[in-house]
Length: 255
Image (cartoon, rainbow, N blue to C red; front, side, top):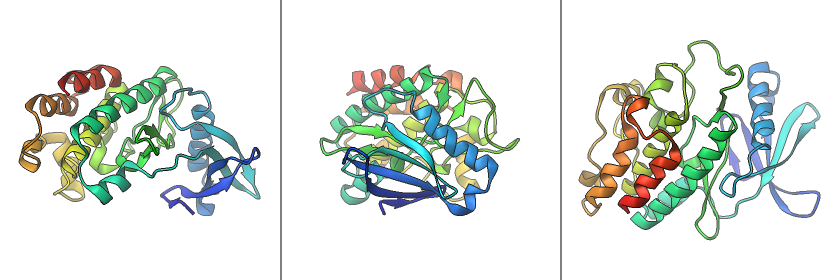
């Protein structure tokens, strides 16, 4: 077993060609929930359409004894969350590189009409060279089809959730700009922007409060990097960079 999450369990397995794969099985109690099952199925179907070096590809999808599964390429190296837990904040250069890689991967997701909506350190895998790869499109919204959530339901991870997600409003590429900004803030400081708050306090802070100055947590951060990262944390989508690539380019220029 590699991981156990909200929707299922991931195992290290062997693919039909003898290669290592990550095999994700939907939780049995979710397999009978039509909404969750459709979301899981769509993660696999939509992910198979994405061809980008920093999006982990889906190799196979199916069902076994009533349990839906998908198999993805196995990325050896662990998640960004694992690295932060083990080593603390990233060097600025590593953070800039990750911004470019993840920004490009998200742009490829947006190009097929999806918005990820759940960018967080646990959903970014780092391979043995340190390159970043996005996983888990299970919360993604297809802009060309119905949103597989219940009316008024906000979906995402509290520490990385954009204000429009909290308000259950329409999401778009700039929603993922906000999520990526939260991830970069975390990578540089070791903590999410509003990590000191809990529960509803986190949601309120995303909606109403300016993020704490990253230089308070890490005084050595260059002013230009701080300004570039914070540009993605504007409360209103229209006040953020228009795409994740444009946002990443700003980070790279500052670095």
